[in-house]
Structures are given as C-alpha cells and as structure tokens.
Length: 387
Ligand code: NAI
Ligand code: SOE
Image 1 (cartoon, rainbow, N blue to C red):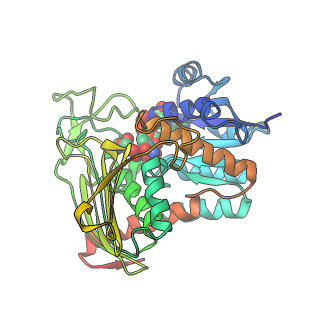
Image 2 (cartoon, rainbow, N blue to C red):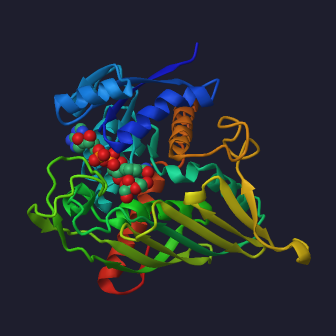
Image 3 (spheres, rainbow, N blue to C red):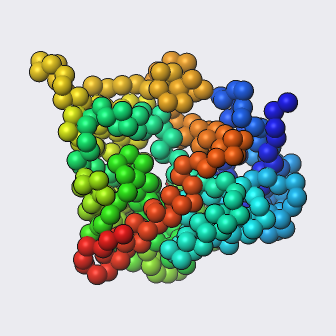
C-alpha cells in the first residue's frame, strides 16, 4: 500500500489554492505515486477563512492556530503559503517539531532569518524545499538538461527578466506586497528571486552584482482585507493612502563563479507584460531562449548546424522531455502554472519518500537570499557587491 503523508498547509490564499490543487492532482499524473499526500489541516487567520479553505481545497480540518497544528504528531509535512514575514517563524517551529517543509518563496524577509531557517532544517535533518516552481516548467527542465549535456557549450551570458504589470496602476491597493515589514522587498524579493533561482539552476552560483532599484509609485490606497488581490479588485482611488516602502523595479548586472556574466531585470509595473519570465542563455556552442508566456516552447540554436539551416528552432515540450511521461501524452497540449506546482509536489513527495534533499532546498534558497541581499545593498552603495 502506498505510504500516506499528512499535510498541514498554512495560508489559504493564491498559493493555498495552487498547492492544494497540486496535492490532489499529483497522483493522477505521477503514478505509482512515491507517497500519497493527504490534505489534513489548513490554517488561516480567522475561523471563517480557514473553514472556507477547508471546504474549497478539500482539507479534512480547519484551524486558526498554526503552532499547535505544526506540533501535532499526525502531521508529516508543513506547507507554508503565508506572506513572507511569517515564513521564518513557521519554518523554524516546523523544523523543531521534526516536520518536512515546503515553504513559498522568497525564503524570508531578512538574510538573518534565511540563515536561521537553513540552520534549523540542517540541524533537525528534515526535508526542506523552497517553492521556486518555474524551474519545474518542462521547457526550463529541458534547458537544464541540454546545458548539463554540454549541448550549448560553456555558458558565457545569462539574461533573465521577470516583468508583470499588475501593479502599474498607482490606484492599485496597498496590499502586503508593498509593505516592507510584510514582504521584505518589492519586485526584487517577489519576482526577482525567481530569476536568481533560475540563474543558479541553469548557469551556477552568482559571485557578484551591481544593481539599481527604483520606487516610482510612492503611496497607494489602503486596502481592507489581508489578501493580495494583485491589483485586480478593491481599487479605491478615494481611500486614504499610505507609503510604499519597497522597490517597484530592479535591474542588476551579474557575475557568475564560472566566469559567465549577465543581467536580471524585474518589474511589476511593465505595462503589457503579464508573467513575462524570459531567459536568454548564450554558450560557446549555441543559445537557448525561453519565454514563460509561451511556456510549451523552448527555442534552441546549435552553432554546429549546417550554415543553410542555422538558426533558432522551436521545441514543443511533451512526453520526450523532463517530467513528460507524467504530464500530457502529446507535445503542446498545454503546460500551465498548475503543472509547475504538480511537478513541484511530485519532486517534494519523492524526496520525502526517498529520504533525500530536493532542489532547491533551504540551503539553495539561502544562496538566492544572499544574492537578493547583495542586489539590495549594491542599489544602496552604488558599488559592486560580492557574495
Ligand atoms: P495571499 O494574500 O493570496 O494569501 C495569503 C494567505 O495567508 C491568506 O489567506 C492570509 O489570510 C493567510 N495568512 C496570513 N497570515 C497568516 C497567519 N499568521 N497564519 C495563517 N494564515 C495566514 O498571498 P499569496 O499570493 O498566496 O502568497 C503567499 C506566499 O506565496 C508568499 O510568500 C508569496 O511570495 C508566495 N507566492 C509564490 C508564488 C509562486 O509562483 N511560487 C505565487 C504567488 C505567491
Ligand atoms: C506577484 O508578483 C506573484 O504572485 C508573485 O508573488 C509570484 O511569485 C509569481 O510567480 C507570480 O506573481
């Protein structure tokens, strides 16, 4: 009989939905499943929110007391889907209680908290994973495979962007994502960290950076609820306004330990861009291009192709590619955000079942935080910062 793992999920918002869906769907895609996640308890700040999340997301129980849930004997995995300022306290308590942990990105609001989280899981020996799910997009997993096989040679340049426009309207509400005390930083921590994770995954460790950050929209209307509606609702241009104390956008130059160079740009105010994660990687034998808004496709160019057919070709990901056997049987049927979370769940549950650390674990997520911290520092000092 397949082993069962009881999940306690904290936070029933956007990511609560994505993770609950992944626990339910994972065995439908990846069968035989390494173990079966059981949606045991969901926690939110009020009984009403927790009850809603239980009924909507298929959990057995609802609670408002995350600490006592984390300490329950029957919980195997703690899944942290709350705003960033709660990640450290919850993850450290979970590690101390001997629970495996999936924690949403960014790992934490401060480097000190990220260090404490990584130390806590190392000391307790639990499995940890940070939810940088975009590296689980099959096209990005294929890029990783091609790079590892040396198909584009030695990497010389990485250009990564993450552009969105949901916060471009100055009357969009002051959700937790615009408050440093809750979010830690703005575009840098929220979406720039995804690019840092992808850069580390595909190219290798970043060694130094020179960066700029900018806040254009200095205040926003105060919103009523705790949820982040991502600019979509609760727009009240006549509501009292309060200051935004995080960055709207960031641009950074990067140096990698292996000698490659590159850049990162992130903004949530880039009109016309929705979830525009682009990667362009140049090597000594070819190039790779990816755009998440066309995430079934990987563009590759091999320098040793015959001169008369040389150029970027488009590969549509499918069963022949990483994770393809579990996902859909025909290329280009359509990979979505859900699939990245289903694959993330599969990798997490496999790691727990096999008692091995997945990637990125908290140590790797700590390295992402170190780079984000160096970028923020460089924007202050106007100098290159080394890792
Ligand atoms: P959200 O605002 O939609 O939901 C947050 C939920 O946490 C709400 O239900 C809120 O009531 C609850 N909550 C807040 N404090 C709590 C506490 N002390 N105890 C229990 N519940 C609490 O936020 P969203 O978008 O789901 O973000 C959550 C986390 O996921 C953040 O760290 C964010 O950066 C990350 N995220 C990651 C994404 C990815 O692609 N990997 C996408 C979206 C968010
Ligand atoms: C908002 O910018 C957001 O929800 C981020 O928090 C996520 O990490 C990103 O994947 C989607 O956009």
